Image (cartoon, rainbow, N blue to C red; front, side, top):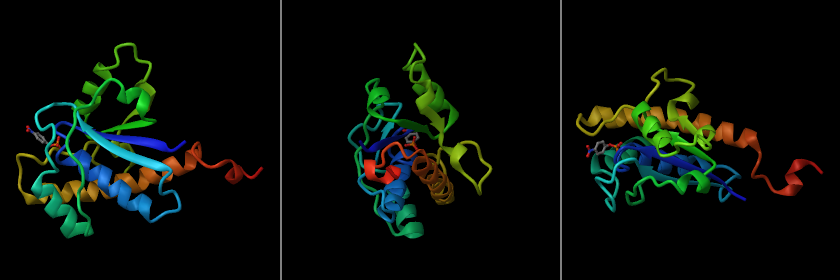
Length: 168
Ligand code: 4NP
C-alpha cells in the first residue's frame, strides 16, 4: 500500500499545491516514487476548481524549475480515512481540520507542516495571498525545508515498503 500525504491550506491555490508539487518533485528523485502519494486540499471552498495561483507558480518555477499541477478542492471528512498523514500549513488550518473530526479519532493523523523543518524556525507557513512576490518565495524556501524533513520522516516509518525490504 502506498503511504498517502494530504497538504492542506485555506484556499488550496498557494501553499498546499506548492507543498504537494515540491514533495512530488523530491519523491521523484528517490527510489520511493509510486509508494508515497501526495494530494492537497483547502479548508475553504473559495477557489474550488482553480489552478494554483500564478504568483506561486512563478516562484516555484524561478526557485526550483518545477511546474505546479492540480485544481483546488475542499477538504472533506472522508480525507481522514483516505490519507495516512494530513499536513496543515498554519494553526488556523490545523484547527479547522480537527473541527471536522469531532470524535478526535483521526487527530493523530494531523500535523503542522513546519514541525518537519530543520533549517527554518517559523512554526507556520505564512499565508502569502495578500502580500508581494517575496512572500511566495519565502513559502517555497520553507516548504522545501519541511518537505525534506517530511520525506525523511515518512521513509523512517517504512510502513509502505514491499515485503522483501523488511529483510526477511
Ligand atoms: P492558500 O492562500 O490558503 O495558501 O491557498 C490563500 C488563497 C486564497 C485566499 C486566502 C489565502 N483567499 O482569501 O481567497
